[in-house]
Image 1 (cartoon, rainbow, N blue to C red):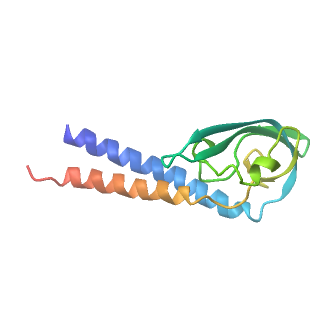
Image 2 (cartoon, rainbow, N blue to C red):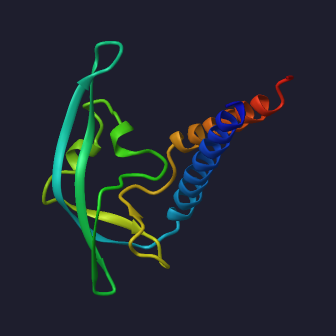
Image 3 (cartoon, rainbow, N blue to C red):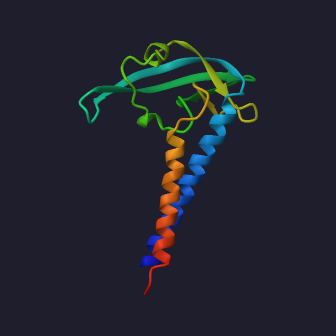
Length: 148
């Protein structure tokens, strides 16, 4: 039983590290990627109240762009944070910029144009993912080294 729990921890650590490292690498590389013109196809603002009772918003959007005659549809705003976790203050300028029909610059990978984001760089959330992987790996190791 303990070996299965340790294995699950190690699997979770590997998954977190893979997702986190990929986001960090792509986010850092995206600063030098070419941009193309894109169009916001669908834009919806999801609202909720945070733990302090303040209203926070997040984007639920889809954009399209073309590279070398091929058209892509994506939803990533920035590398390292799922859009579902990207809660912002209502005053954030992105809510004016990311409206349906708006033309937006899209950063895309020169070697894989299907990989893109509306904002270059990496979110600090990616580093949290890496830290979660480290904690999970430590837990797996501790389970395997328990006496008895």
